Length: 136
Image 1 (cartoon, rainbow, N blue to C red):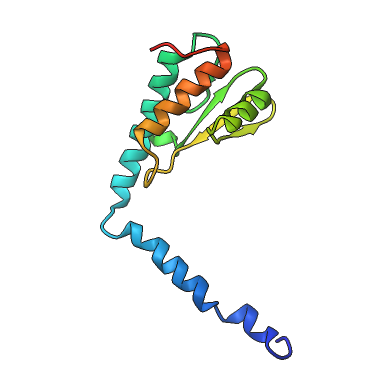
Image 2: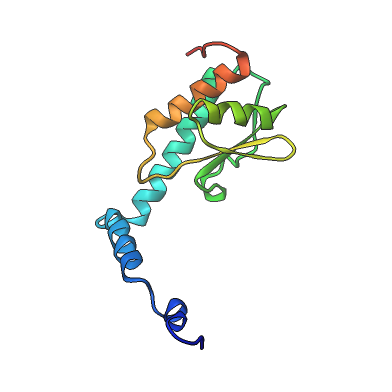
């Protein structure tokens, strides 16, 4: 063990941090994991439909499994210049991430991500890829 007060840093949780964690977990009260999973799948399905409707064919390719049993709460799309595309999306308020060499990833947190957020992400993606307003 460390000498003095440093001994308490490692083994004793900080009470203020624990209170914040306890409050953060309150949003889960009454929410079943099945409901969270259902919304996760609904959001990712909806986002993929919006991408198909807004983004002209051939500009992106989904590498996310279509089967729900094989999918998490994210969508991965392959596109040329993915790094530059993601940088522009972030600049426009759509935060995802980029994986080399050519993959855009979008995460959907079911507790607070709205269907309107997923639609906006697809619309702005189409605008970035086409250099104009999305159709649909």
